[in-house]
Length: 467
Image (cartoon, rainbow, N blue to C red; front, top):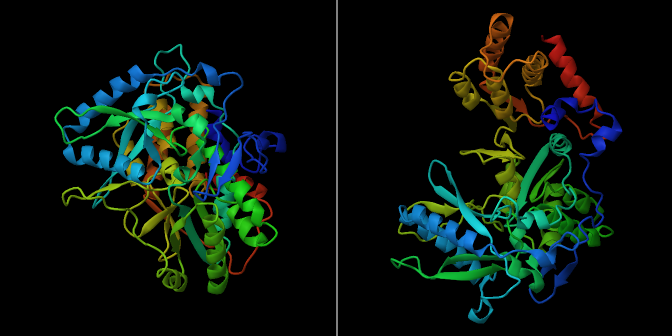
């Protein structure tokens, strides 16, 4: 709950309180050995094991075997998704991302098996599938998962609030992301048997045989993966700091695998585009899915960029695609449909250069909730407004929830009297925020943001003035 209230404390916390949220400065917090593989032109890392725990990793084969059979029973009812699941692994096998475990190595004592499952996202035209590995799975409640045995590592991401504020400074705004960022980083041979998983040799058969695979790259689902990605990128771009300091400064502000920055001229934007692409390419990373509010910039780069959002796989003509959105978009929020894209979870209509806060789903949910303390918390948790566009509402909502907590109201106790009036008043205010549009750029001329300390105070002041 403490973390839940922190957003409204921006600019009001002391330096000591704020330090726990600050990202790493670029030092090797994980103590992960990072090397560049000149043969495959990509970085290779070792997993950051906790001291003295690597030798105690359990196999978890039986658990993974049971979950695979359960997954197969579900997928058998949807042949298209089963084929798509299989096609993802076949594609990764062809690209060298995974490899089949040789029969003579299948009984290795130091092997660990990861469970996996599919996350499906539907939009208006396609069904998109992402395979996620469960590094936190345990064979029994008293055992340790793989993630329990790995160091989480440092936070290499800049503050979300700072990143979004910088994105509002310049006339020309630009976004991009790193293609399959985790899968561009190799894992050293000594750790690959820890990343084994089970799948089938031929899903078209009535009773396909189960075979063993292992990952040669960083896996989506390990607790250490975000830190390793950030550490590797910092390590790579630091080599170009003396030659391209401004571009490296921008790349240092990557939010995991998402890039957002701004410029004042198209020439400047194109120069950064070319240099950033080249720097990241030399580390085995591909910056793609470029977007901007400037049509001239987009027009000049479209010849060299593949603008397809997803890669369609042959599944008998149906619209099923692999979900290849960036880690940040997956973690922060699903991408929007139509012409509206997401910048770190915030809707951005690049054609009219507006941020949009759409709350129709919250309003719809509020109509079916009973007037209780639990309902207030649910509504507050549904609102993602990192820039505080409707803080005049969310601050009052959270303040009312805190008041109910201080007065020790039960979670499901119906609100009555003055509490019910306050609850109904908040719902009336919520209905006024169905769609909020705010200009993305708030400066006519370039201004460098030196501090965001004042923003929290401004949020609180606006809420008090409009009560």
